[in-house]
Length: 314
Image (cartoon, rainbow, N blue to C red):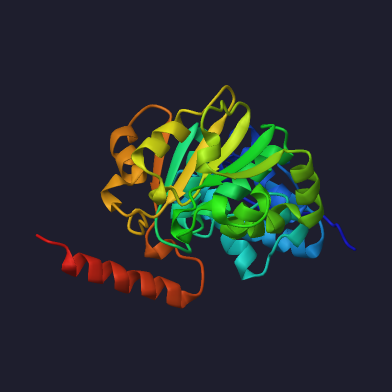
């Protein structure tokens, strides 16, 4: 397989943009397409197989065009360009994607990933299909695989099931796993079934109901609170105050899909209302434009949003 270097002439501004701070932008492209990017002067050289060079070149040209137009190039732009290039056919290998190297498909997703990387506490709010949970799981799995945290913990309320866990058959895992199916599917896609099993056996990955977080201090862990719109205010305060040294937390949910008997008791909207703007807290809001499932899902979300707006008391 040919690994001939390919030279891509670029302006000085474009070279600086595609390299990024401390070479971060180039490193993301190298990791996605398994290529080597060097800057000999007057441009960059891309070394790798033909498919990898094609994908990397597509990303670098997109970034260079932004730089030459006088626009700032930040990490979110790199991740968006990676997602576009992969969809267009310069796809990174499935193995690379399974190792937590997940690229955003929309600007909203890119901002969300930046927020998770730069804030100890992030909220991801929006409708189904926008990637809130999948991207949070991917980010947490990536941190675990890189040794940046010791554990990945996913928790969510089981309110929507309409059943109490204690009355269901089986041990804790057997009771909880059906409610966590989306999380396990995401982890399997990112880590692979064998590694997921090994990490779970070593207790590096834990999935448990919100109630099991009470009284704990979650240190050196990446914590995901999923379906948080179904947490009560007391539960939300309890789980948010579990953060310990070296921990990060992402809270995801759709404030319009509350399954509590008293929707006004939802802790998600309340938490966002009092914590947005607090140092160390980021809030990312998704819209129908960020839906990445079947195209029909976006149209369904828009129809429901329009109906809700029409029937909102004025």
